[in-house]
Image 1 (spheres, rainbow, N blue to C red):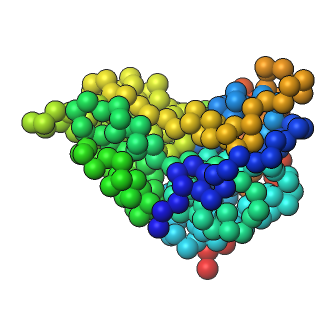
Image 2 (cartoon, protein in one colour; image 1 turned 135 degrees about the vertical axis):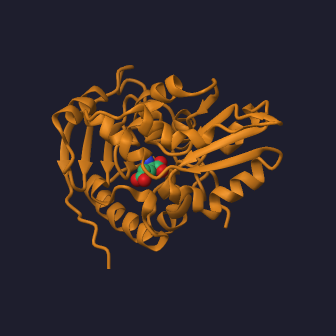
Image 3 (cartoon, rainbow, N blue to C red; image 1 turned 180 degrees about the horizontal axis):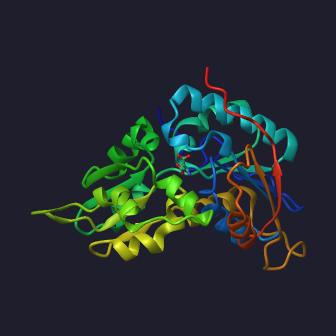
Length: 291
Ligand code: DGL
């Protein structure tokens, strides 16, 4: 199954929106904050809602049918409550699976986040590229197709990190995260052989850029880390246009956040959210019920 990298069937720009658009940025947890920053930079006038399905976090370990049903159910609620003009699915684990179903069910544009394999293949000199992702994203047919289509000439190592998204959440919540724990997750990205060594690592989970400075500090050699967030924001503005003149200045407006649980909202996390422009936190309680 192939679907358009970022925009799928909704690839054509929309009729221009002459008021401030409502943009919903969605993730399983806090990873979408890395995309939120680029979205706000690109459309400072937008009214942005950040939605975290933290009741079902992590998505990376969920079976595919469970994840499809979950994302559709949560999106149904979020769209009914917030009436977005566009949704950014700031989650590779969800985007690589659920985008076709979302586009079929809802009549608004969805911009997905998928592993940036193509820019990685263009950037590598050694031909050794590693893709750091959740186990779910690594398993997807869609991810394999991206590799076959865009990186056939490279040696691609897919690294399914079982606990890295949770470590990023812990760090943002003010808990200590050791270098040893981080290395256990990212170490397999660093491949060295007769042909050379890895020179590009794809950050194929939106949580991962939250800890980029930590990876750089423990990396055994320098590599190029590829974060798709700026490209996702560009895709959004292709679809809904740039800022509407006279509606906002260059400083982005406050963000409203909605959590489906909110159980892990520590004071440190509230501060981290406030630092990222989140002025108000609400709860759309939706426990995950596994049958
Ligand atoms: N932030 C999500 C992604 O980009 C995944 C984290 C999770 O496992 O829930 O894939």
